[in-house]
Image 1 (cartoon, protein in one colour):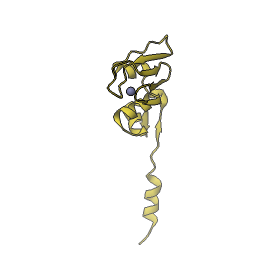
Image 2 (cartoon, rainbow, N blue to C red):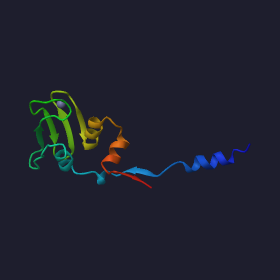
Image 3 (cartoon, rainbow, N blue to C red):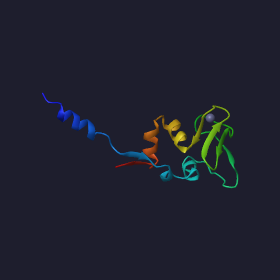
Image 4 (cartoon, rainbow, N blue to C red):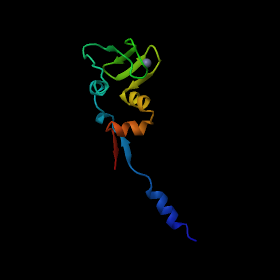
Amino acid sequence: MSSIGLRIAAGNTRKQSKFKRSNLPSPESFWAAHGITLKAKKRWVMAKCIFHDDHHASLGINTETGGFFCHACVAKGGDILSAYQLLVGCDFVTAAKALGAWEEK
Ligand SMILES: [Zn+2]
């Protein structure tokens, strides 16, 4: 049996996919979709946490990066991709695709 066919197949399976951060929605629109309004003039906004059953405003959100930190449940991340991953429980690529920032060619 020849191995040529196998070699060709292996060479063609790599897809050109890539993450495009510029396609991500703005932190403002992402958090608005989860009921949290970011005020652009403030660097940090405190809101009720979406990662646990919060009764106070425990979740700090950075209005520039979309990063977040909860003082109660210690949920944290550097951007809206991490927020989506944590919320849904998925990996980076799934989050990037869901947020429209993954291009497959
Ligand atoms: Zn929390």
